[in-house]
Length: 104
Image (cartoon, rainbow, N blue to C red; front, side, top):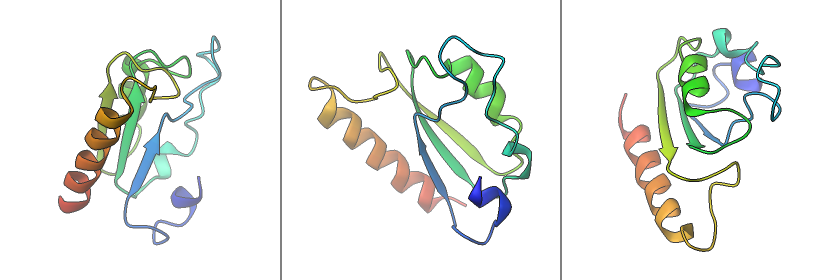
């Protein structure tokens, strides 16, 4: 919300498990500021996140006029990382951030 209010604040955003809506309440979207967001944003989101499905996140990203990318984490919930995937998810996110930060 702060970046939407002041686009000069940061060059890019990394949003991990953005809580699009409360679990089981898909009509209570937290996207009111999305149409004002001018900062490029990379969203990392689990495919089993109760705060928003991948389809819901994809639809919400269309509201943002700035460049956006979505990195889905297969099988992950809102926590993204568990003991079994911690290293792989961390490496994937780092690579995605580097790529996103390097592109214009």
